[in-house]
Amino acid sequence: MRAVFITGGTTGIGMELAKNYLSQGWKVGVCGRDRQKFEENFTAHRDNISFYNVDVSERNDLKAAIADFSNSIGLDLLIANAGIGYKFKTKIPDFEYSYKMVHINLLGVMYAFEAALDVMIPSGKGQLVAISSIAGYNGLPGVSAYSATKAAVQKYAESLHLDLKQFNIAVTTICPGFVETPLTDTNRHSMPFIMKAPRAAELIVRAIKKKKMIYAFPFIFAAIVRLISMLPRTWYRFIMTRKTFNYSSKE
Ligand SMILES: NC(=O)c1ccc[n+]([C@@H]2O[C@H](COP(=O)([O-])OP(=O)(O)OC[C@H]3O[C@@H](n4cnc5c(N)ncnc54)[C@H](OP(=O)(O)O)[C@@H]3O)[C@@H](O)[C@H]2O)c1
Image 1 (cartoon, rainbow, N blue to C red):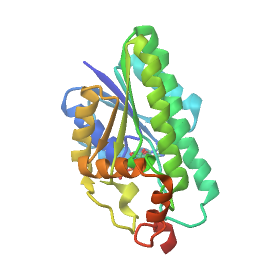
Image 2 (image 1 turned 90 degrees about the vertical axis):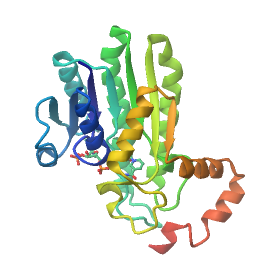
Image 3 (image 1 turned 180 degrees about the vertical axis):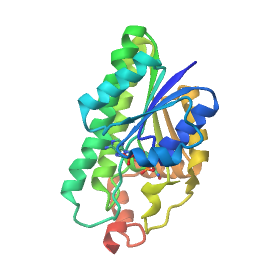
């Protein structure tokens, strides 16, 4: 039986990924800070799932959780999904919250990968997945540290994809557009092409199975965003300082 550990599996995309893998007969480990959310959201799925009450910004705790799961169950796949977004877009960043975001969204991915590699390198196989975002392709207004952490995660995983091939370890980066989860619940701006979380999980699982290097979706939104990222930056700045696109100018 195959085994996957998913960070941040108590709600949203991580929860739907966990349910998707459970339905395919995988053994699943998830972590999160809120045990109650796990209890509420997995009432019907207790058999093949283990919950670890761990904050991904605590390196040693995460390492111990992933080691415990892999020793008792195994580890074929690690999905570093845990992340936080800004509840509100602001012109001046909330710096305390931004630092916390760097710890969770960037260091949390590195800690998870480090712990998984302790197992995967000696066994000569495995797959690492980082959940980045379409927000990582451009510096977006009002979400500075979110864009920065997601861009960093993309490049970090791209480097590891090159380095870890020789150990037979695949590295995949997933860049979702807008997905209906608690993270997007508080957004007051328009969210083009927003998708339900179970559908997003299906697409992510498919891309992971194909061992894609990078997968951005939904297709049209991802194509537009990638195209924008190729524009001369002066054009980009001109567009993004228009009131229609500049979320932070409204708050
Ligand atoms: N929703 C979107 O539109 C969207 C788009 C692109 C990318 N993403 C990315 O997808 C990932 C999942 O987001 P989501 O939309 O599913 O959000 P979500 O529903 O808020 O889920 C976030 C998950 O991460 C966990 N988490 C947060 N901080 C954590 C920490 N310090 N330690 C351990 N677990 C932590 C949460 O669990 P606890 O609260 O129990 O700790 C929860 O299980 C994030 O990386 C996000 O940036 C989301």
